[in-house]
Length: 383
Figure 1 (cartoon, rainbow, N blue to C red):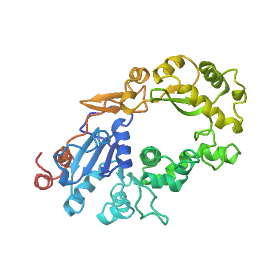
Figure 2 (figure 1 turned 120 degrees about the vertical axis):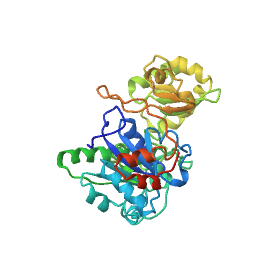
Figure 3 (figure 1 turned 90 degrees about the vertical axis):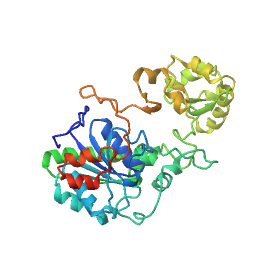
Figure 4 (figure 1 turned 60 degrees about the horizontal axis):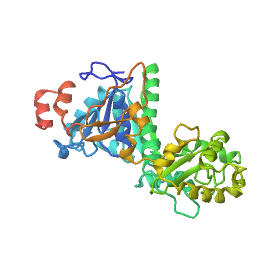
């Protein structure tokens, strides 16, 4: 890893420098994950945004922000000089864009052979859709995940942008970069990491494909164990319009579920895995859950080994006693946000710094990499 850092950071990635070519969604999420764990992430933003507060105050936290025009040769040379000092790079453009800018992997690795060049796309660097536009919903649809979600008589639900953008995209890229860095440390050889959201989504389907291969899953929505088909693995509405999440898969948890609900002696529930009975079981459970409020059911299940929990909203989740005890969320100013994860006992991460004003570190970084004063004056905005 590179040394001679001017910023004091803690965490397992302290001493690592990452250059992030400004993008949206999964690329910044990968940068956030690395910055959260101590990496010095330098984000290259557009000059037109200089001096503005970040539009993404959480995804852009913990960075240093530099504004440079990637269409200007002098700015591109400055970016290359920053890349010379870096361990890794993140870019999320369509295939071929960075090559046209003079910032492609061949140019960067020629200057910095140890560099890990991380590429984040929806479709990947090749294939018939490589140049096609798309969003999370498209990537998870083509990869097969979206078509496995939801009840069979309803449209597939939109699962936020967690499956493609974040889990199958940014988190996959962060893993790819860190594993390639291990190789670079051992061998001195950098490489390109091709992280595609379609690939990352497919990898997340490993368990489901395993169940499918062994006859424990059918390629039909809403009739399987984890797709809402099982009455003991789904959500139920309560009398006040709230919801309870039921995950009583194992027999011992299923027994507790029935006990709390007063259904132990009902013959309908005698055979937990009788799929023919599942629709009727679900209707009966829905009827029982609808008889009390969410708070009442939460109290009833509290302390039981049933795998039944209330369904929280985004802000409400931060007040859950378990999340409070672990500090899962914290507030910076008036911005509620998730704390860095995972946690390390030996090299704990510090609380991330807030997202900076765009371009706030331009002069600092350009001076740091040794550019002449006149070049810095020409490239750096006065913020």
